Image 1 (tube, rainbow, N blue to C red):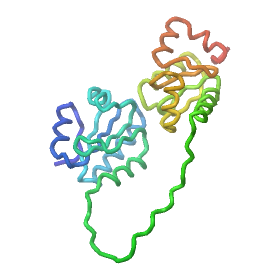
Image 2 (image 1 turned 120 degrees about the vertical axis):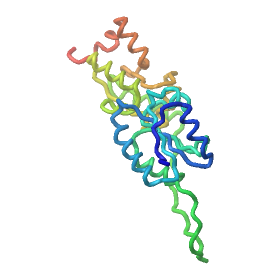
Image 3 (image 1 turned 30 degrees about the horizontal axis):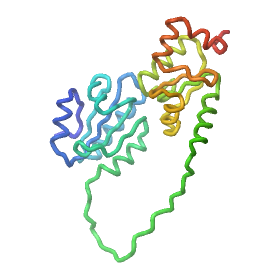
Image 4 (image 1 turned 180 degrees about the vertical axis):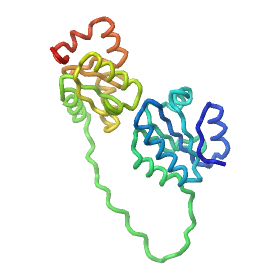
Length: 241
């Protein structure tokens, strides 16, 4: 039986995961419009050939939105490693190196040692201590990022390779309105991602900033455009003014 399946219903997913509650499964969430998913889907198929003990489940996040919502998928590509129904690790973004490392950590069945040695195991390499950012330092850094240009879009991915539908639609809207902007990919910095939710009192992304001030998310910007209020906000930065 193949260890790679295209999941076409919640019932199919439940059945596949329930067949062996000790087996490790990789749930690969993708969307047909997201360019990074195409390359990652190829990597997933290659990994499936290497890890025959792992169950690989390919899931169209938009076609199977009920499944995506149940696993709180906010962007694609996203990957969940499960043992039975227990979450082992969550990965977001087109990072095959991270996916390879996760599979190496969780995907191999334990192998009994073939030889014995009386030598003491080598000491693990020293891990450098990372300086912890204080709340005050984070606030100052968020303020600097929000002011790095007249218009800043905090989004998932980049304008040319957005990693969620909301970010993709926000980029399209700003381009339609001829608004130049600098972007920041929140997937590159978890402190910024979580800090902005508190700093701007807004729990989701994308977040659009003008002259250092939070304007809103996609729905707010769309409403401002429809009500002809957006012009006053961006009149000083719009292309051609």
